[in-house]
Length: 357
Image (cartoon, rainbow, N blue to C red):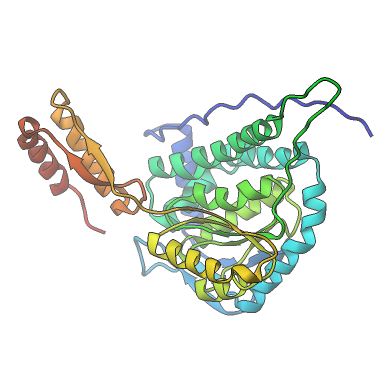
């Protein structure tokens, strides 16, 4: 079989488009928004590469317009979580044996699809399903997700390239292998990019994944799976399940082959899962890896030489943009007394113009 030492394509951050009036991207996006707003969605789970419909339908409605029914998704049960685990374990031997370049090619292809032909759809789905504006969605659902998939490949190559030095007559080398079992990816409602990265990163490294998205972000999660499949992801590598959180946790955290958790969400939920996993340690074949990101008390610090209007704008957007529903939302501010009165005046003016809902 032919061999080669391959060089990765150069990786740069995906440029952010403006969607200014009259631009081609704005025209295309408005057309896609009109198309997808018509509704009629019927979103199945994707388990083992197959569409699974249960007939137990749950509504999909935009957060900004609860009266508008976009369609439905098929709610899963414990048996579907178990099915997803079985498919992940079945797909594991072939996936982890695949050359890393081939795994990388799948995610690089997915990045190209998102940045290219699916760009408007990723934006429209995130705008409708998660109530973001075009600029917020472009940064999140397109540029950040594309960057995740491309830079993950670069970092995978960097990890594999970290090799020990050798003494005379000896050739030392380090090999990396996936975890023993399956990964559980539990993803949030507020960032399409994070929803795509939490199952994608461990899968890139040769792991297989059970993915439970937020019930309010099923629309974008289904699109991510669609693109990954089009990019060549084999069935069973990532299994998309719309199950109740307690049902999923009850099956997954009691399974012998549970190998790792990849999570973004609230601190309370993360703490609860950590305690459950620790209490079940004797059930597992190895020590599960736990990776999680939760909320923080992010601050804005202003020097006395700062521009009061810029500080007020940063605080207004940092604290109230997207209703503050971000782990990076500003929660605290340290403002010099000499600056505060002007900053307060601008903030109050900004807030007076913000619509609720």
